[in-house]
Length: 221
Image 1 (cartoon, rainbow, N blue to C red):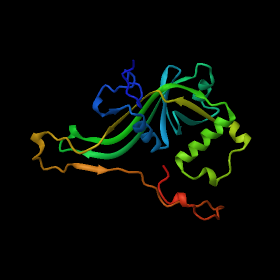
Image 2 (image 1 turned 30 degrees about the vertical axis):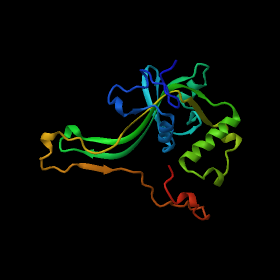
Image 3 (image 1 turned 120 degrees about the vertical axis):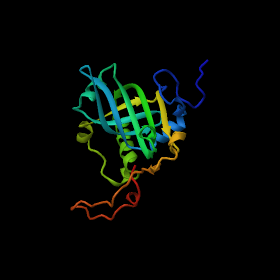
Image 4 (image 1 turned 60 degrees about the horizontal axis):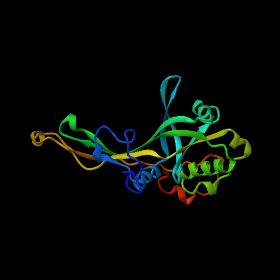
């Protein structure tokens, strides 16, 4: 029998943080909510014996992550192989700067997900289209229906890798300052500075004469 609660990802040595374990969460809904709130991840893998971390766009579709790439990139070449590419994918949202009266207790409020596993290149044309549509929608909801779909040539020049969500955990910090009692009387400001994504006014391309679509009125991802 598994000790993993229903609706949760497996807890093991790989998915359990060594520090602040009380901030970890394996609940699927909690993990998915953090993933669905973003569109940029960092893809880590080993190349020629050295670690490499690359930023890229992603989308979650059910129990899988799809990561965007180029057909000429080295991780995509490795993911084509039958054995796939061992990877670590991270997503982080910075929610606040926690400023304490002591430098030691400064911190940040955040939400994060770390996913380990083996990624494989998507080769099925239908799955590839679905994945690319999902990546566009993850970044700008509503955009897929408001742009030309990729041509066969463009699809051939674009690659996507798929990582099944299995070895996954979330970690977060919320709340205020944890100052030491002896520091409470010190004459320094302490508190939390909230951090949130900010999007500027959309700037139309010179050749665009269409009205600004409604889905661009608010934050994209």
